[in-house]
Image (cartoon, rainbow, N blue to C red):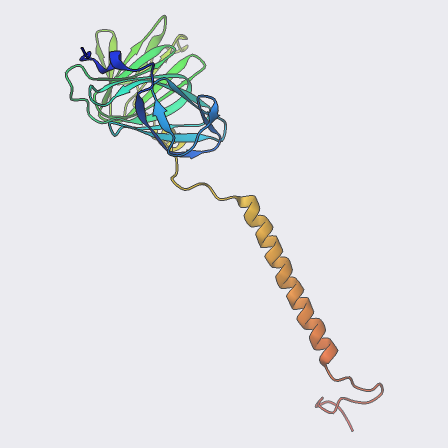
Length: 255
């Protein structure tokens, strides 16, 4: 008999979760160089280096955009049952999640000190130095601290042990309490813009500026050389005027 739960039928974590749609090198999948159109399987580990970024489309239509210096594991993604689980050890990621409509569906992203869940929204998560930052662009996100972590919340709503973060709001999870305590505030505009910029991945590879520089130098040298050749040719082909005689074409020449 077949199990009604797709998660229990996963053959050793080999179910397809999605596909890499764009990247900026350097990025890896399971410690090997990642390529556009690489399929993603359950438990695949995606990493980017200092100059790398990566975007992946999941099979349900959700989009993950991984910023630089980041690590994200696609633990599980089943489009039919809408069961998605991601883990981020460090870095930053933007997630555009399709609406979860299945009764038992979930989309969760875990960091070392928080769990972030959504029903369908566009949000950003970063983790660095024991601090999880969550910014909601549209929709709503629920955030739960784990372990001894505390919540630095803005105007989000407290719901038992969770914080509900709405569009334009930000929450920070940390084990260290700020000297001034936890102060409510909306997401600063520059912080929201920076978070979107840090996880933006272009479909077109960036130009090789150094190659263009070499090309421009070579073209410039060729033009300069051609100009010099023309000048020398004109000089060599101009009729010579005998020494001591006046050029008859010169109006100032006195015969």
